[in-house]
Image (cartoon, rainbow, N blue to C red; front, side):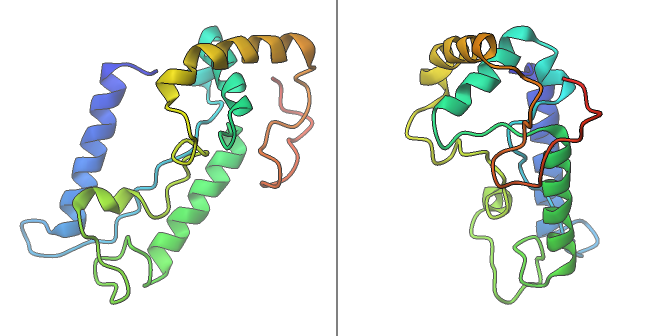
Length: 162
């Protein structure tokens, strides 16, 4: 969705997190909080009309959910604080309870995938249907209401514009 520069940036972030976690030249290991965030209605996503419509439509394929920015930021902050402050977190390389079997497993435990990892459909296979259902949904509903997933962090503030 975001292009090759975004993919390269995210890959470099993951690489750096793995290097810091497993060891660096001075031999020290570091706590690394590198959680994946859920699909979010960020400016870079909703700034593209087609992507914004598909993002809304993908929620018709449970358990996929798209988050508002405020919900996403709060969730990822809570996960980061957990990673930093609790010894049993996988993010702590000295944790006696948790061990990372493969470097990419560092990103699995606390990832907020928005349902895409449990969805019975591949994201590529529901793209067109997500767009169509998102278009119908946008036409039929008022978008002034709450856009946080049900049961998440509460209602959307009234002063936020959509």
